View (cartoon, one colour):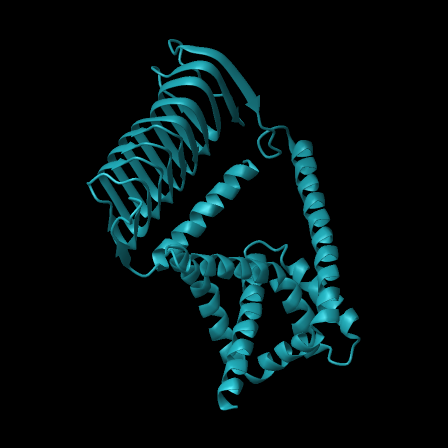
Length: 372
């Protein structure tokens, strides 16, 4: 529904993908009392610690006592009997939090989320299936299905397709619900101020005329967005042709001569670079290196489609003016990127192509220096 929910859900998906690939390692508490744990199956120590960063495919936290904040990410995250002095952050696919007291905020993003007997200052949840039962001073929940029970000693905002409110739900402030259909408010629920904000939907409101207007509006927005990105990527492509014309030519030649190396190196680089960056960030000495690697990775992804369009088109139009051919190649890829699923795959392939060229070029330069 909202952009914030989509962004948070995307963050959770990325974190899950990284956590499933992180190599296993573990470390005891450092001199500051912080715990860093990562691996396939990870569990937190039952002894008190200050703060923690935990990542893994399966994360178990039983009877934890943390003075500071705790950050967890994994395919499945289970928290039972937790006492957190500051804030609790969790991202994953299946998340279960039971009997947790958090002095700060509780921020959770994932797919299937259950918070039971959980108390926190502000509780912020984004996911698919959400169930909250606890106490909070503020609640913000966004998902497809959201069920809420307990006491909100302040304001609550719920954005979902299906909203389920328990009969014993208590909201001392305002309860704001954004949904296509207005939910049923229990008659005996002590809710002080209820605000319903309907979300218009072309498919669910109105007849054929309204449906046509909704579809037409979405098509216009899609075409406008495509035109904007064609212009933006074309301008960036012109800059690449001016500054990196030789590299564009070398990249196209590399595809013709070593297609297997480009494909293999692109896939490995696209998967391994973020994993290596996360692993480096979990250390003290190499954390700046990991941050720089992650920043470089993001910058390369931003330039992937423009680089691929301006470079690959030279295979098919070798005699055309380089600037004009770049415009054609970038525009073609941007149009293809409008197609659902296929567009996503094209974008990923373009990113892999640029990453492969950078890695292979660095490797070749390294070999030349060794031979010299």
